[in-house]
Image 1 (cartoon, rainbow, N blue to C red):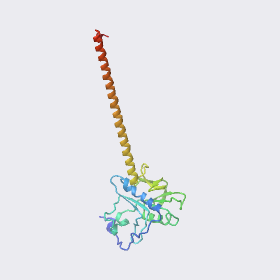
Image 2: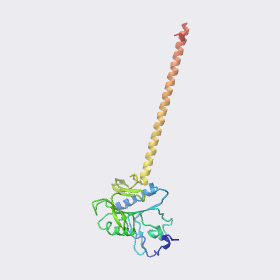
Image 3: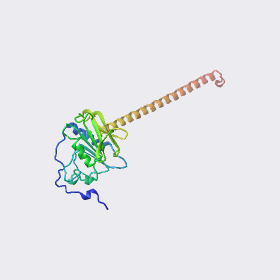
Image 4: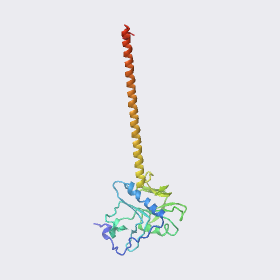
Length: 262
């Protein structure tokens, strides 16, 4: 009987799992959060109770003797983080623990020295990360803001769309405001192209839907009240007409005439 990869976990006492190095700029920090927080706030996962892990700036170890490679954002489906994430053996993404490489890795380019399309690409290819995304908002490395690569036949091949069937997700550029900053961001979308909302966006949407439903309910009540008043007015008019007819009939009888004969 074969053993899981975690059974062969190497000694990791010598590994540096975090060095407290800050991210390079505020845009990158916000962009990383925009690519992780919505998945936990508004995404149910790829379906059928499948689990996922989304991280920003967390080291990935695929060979114990090598230092970690630290993607800006990673997404791995059908895995779960340990409940004891403070334990040394669970602080990073160890391939021998999770049993697979991440499915999607995203690098955010902020200068020309990050080697996102050279050395980092080679490392992710050796790791066999299925999809590698380079987000280059200022076009430091190419004329394209987003490039997507798929690992095939031991190397990365350019993919012309930004869809990831394994996760039932995609990516798109979005011009909008996030945390008070209006610019062009990279956002997750579902299979139908609908943006995966942040927690604040989802709360605002639900509030707006409740307000709309309340207005519709209030309008329906007003319309019902108006219909009742109209019905009451019609009944009142009918009763008044009957009273007038009865008075006329009484007057005719007093004059010695039969009102039914008229």
